[in-house]
Image (spheres, rainbow, N blue to C red):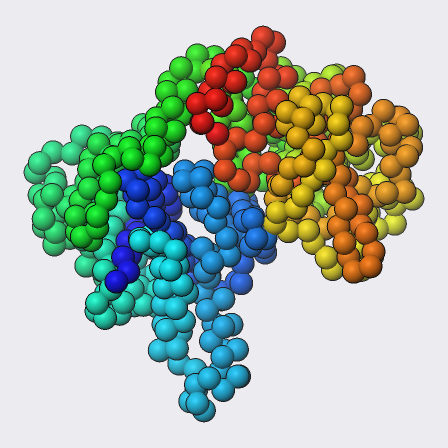
Length: 530
């Protein structure tokens, strides 16, 4: 019999993902195999067309699935790779049901709600073959019409004999009788997790009565604004939430620490506490004040903690027409230009790369950030004033950035092998002499091979590349570049996606610091914190 823990909340952003990822970590720490699945209620097939400024980061999995940031949180916490099977949208469900109907699998009957529910159950149950427990995060809020069928599928699985427990996160840190769910579907919660700094026994009793659970099923950890997300697993262990759920499911589990997973989080929390200075990094981007670049920012912060510094990410809105970039970048220790699509703000990003080149500021570009650096380099050192990308100017005289293929239909997604050039800084200093690494990608444009020779003659170092096979044709893709005599590096891939802190971020922070304690980094990485 399979075991399922369904995580729900009363608000769309109720901390479910951090809770689900933390719980997965705790179960793995007790030697229990776990799978995670995110159920998203929107009708899109993936997150590729969602506005990151409003919906948060687009996260790319190893197998090239375009998902939301929640899978990134799960990977960071557990160290497990997520994939397409861990991310289900209602749009995917409907498309699958309609396809099966057209294939005649419903014996001439029309596709109805029952078939939709069965497809949801099938997608969830697929994960049971490789795990003892499946943690199901239901997106949105309980009571939303969009996720009614997800909750109904779980209810039917419970009625049919599957072990299904509901872990519910209330509306507020001090849930009371007024903190009701939205009108619509109600669930029978098995455990309640509140974010409350000091929960009294009286409040605990009131919450238990409201949700119809025993007092011992109400758990509390400090509010989100008082502890970092990396401390949540430690606090849940202190609250014995994992112990309670294991008992309720009737699972055989090892002792806490058997899996050594929690030790890694403890070391991160200790690093956070030891950080005693601040490092300001300029972050030139299209979407400010949002979660659009969550993984990049987390990677910068984690890399900073390795060196006992708190990285303050200074967001600079590249779309501002009145932006005085030199003034904004004055005083920052380094400059980051992350990924992005669309023309908005591109010229200010190019100016940021030019500023880094001319002022010898540490520069880190990811994905679009590499293309921006190449454009800036071509304009500044090659004198190609019209240098641009075909994405932004289809009529440019010098398309130093071109489409990956001639028809513009192919995108490079997911894991790809990157070949590093021996003797370059990225190969020797950043990746320790490795000649091949595997990193995730999400792009449809590349450095134009026609301009490689002149760029290299002007001092741009191609330190990493890939050779894709497109039928009989081999497509050369520049993967990493660095600038001779400058502290500028950029990569076409997404170093922020994956398990652990990519050495590229450690290198960038090290370049930003006037004096770096390299022994601290090597010692911590030797302790397996990555």
